[in-house]
Image 1 (tube, helix red, strand yellow):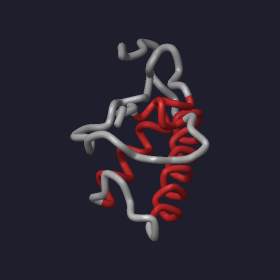
Image 2: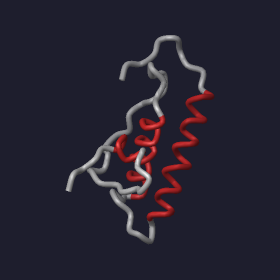
Image 3: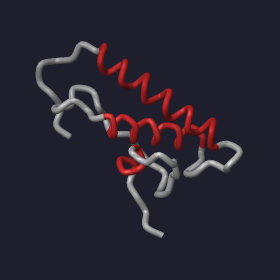
Image 4: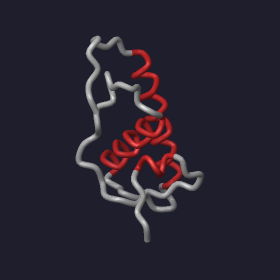
Length: 92
């Protein structure tokens, strides 16, 4: 089985969540260039994994897990687009 990172997962039509659970979520604020949709999706996936305690949800929980990732990604994009940041961007 080939493992894929979270960025690769973000673009797949069928969602599977292989790989290890995160220990930290990368800061996306003030990043230059602006964070991509894949980076935001990966951060949302990490957050849901951490909060739920599941690296990969059961089939019964997968719809809720996937919906949470999508909602958090949308909220994250809205937050980042709304923040007023300092003129010196952070390095990633």
